[in-house]
Image (tube, rainbow, N blue to C red; front, top):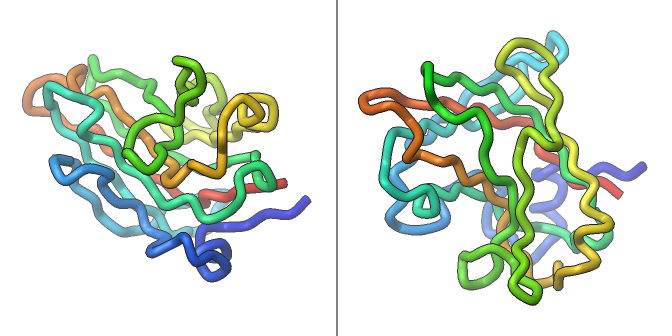
Length: 174
């Protein structure tokens, strides 16, 4: 099995300007911090996304540039640590945006999956996400994918609270 990390891919592709997570739209209100998290007793680099309540989830999309032919590397995986206040949603969208910063479309169908459908809780509040997109990707023009995105439903966060999502070890596999 071939595994390419974001660092590996960004060095190989002229489509990538950065291997870092970043807001997709200018209106994004997500705060981001660089740090580490422990995965299998090892400290790894992580990006923490800090969400607060807003009226629109879509404007809070955070993504990383697509850096490979996703038909060649259709298995996406990452680790995530989720710190939720009581009453905040525990599920969110994992998807790909095209050039117009909107979900990839095919005949009215969007390429989106719910995080918990493909995640396993490995410790309290810590998850391993693995999505084998081979079958689903055949329905979409994956060459149009520009960003791998996470879209959290910020309208469900209790007033005055925040949700912290630490993301690490994002990889695309054959």
